[in-house]
Length: 409
Image 1 (cartoon, rainbow, N blue to C red):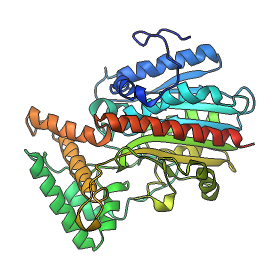
Image 2: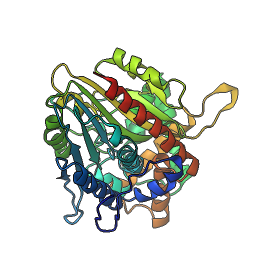
Image 3: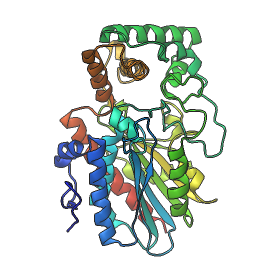
Image 4: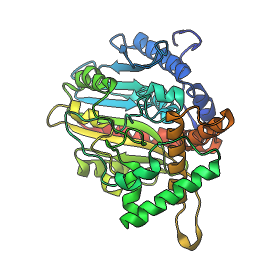
């Protein structure tokens, strides 16, 4: 059963397993193909549930023909929408394919199990479409959409950022060689760590949002970008109007042990969150409450839109659902390569891609392609085992979270 939409064909509603991983990642690698596939499912769902709302929020670009948009689907509860499940993807461009796979998985695996008498479901596809198209975590304006949410609040920059600003800011084009870029970044960050007498402060400076330098990674921008405001006001607020419980999972990749799925929780009721997550003990999914996470972006994280949109008194369980990309290296003397070498690797690739963003003609095409390939490998590695693990663990997590929502009476 399904509907045809261009080249999408008939919407496949059979359950997703790990065997589908490579095919699904291929379908969702390209923004436009993924969007067409998502809208194919949206039209199929509207045929099944006529009250389904399908919409788009256009995203501005310097290219007037770019046709970029955040597409969204809301399947309203048939009765009072006391509970809402929201899934979003593409806040960071190159991390989007996994998120689009995750949304399709929920549609095919879990949607039929949702108690639609009291539960609304919301899907947000391609929150940062420009970054998806151009293989860049931030938007065309270099604003990181996962650091941009304010919700009406004035949010300070990371205190650790000044320690790494000199190394990470794109003041010139990238090095002509990969090793040159890596050595420069390592030397700069080592100097920053020594100057601040804190490796932790240096790490946080790399990871947390900052509003100081518009040419550095993870720039949160001076104001919220229009699509963030529109998502909150036009999609989330109406969906949450009657809610007493909201679950918002935002799909990401890159941080943590390669192929492992992390549930990075930021609930407004952390004790209830911890109790609820006990059902995942024994699975491969790694639960991290806020106080165990590597860094804190909870003040500006995209999922904070759900906190801002939910009515007073509502339990809001928000989480970054992150598949790790760090190489499973182990350094001598018991030092963990996952948290040391991988962070340096990530830093120099972030820096080089940022330099290329601001100085696109400073290196030859071969070097530019290399920078793109290394950057893409951080967030969407072409690795069969990684993709299969991501799909299998995500299936476990989504089933568990839906069960938790359904059990809440």
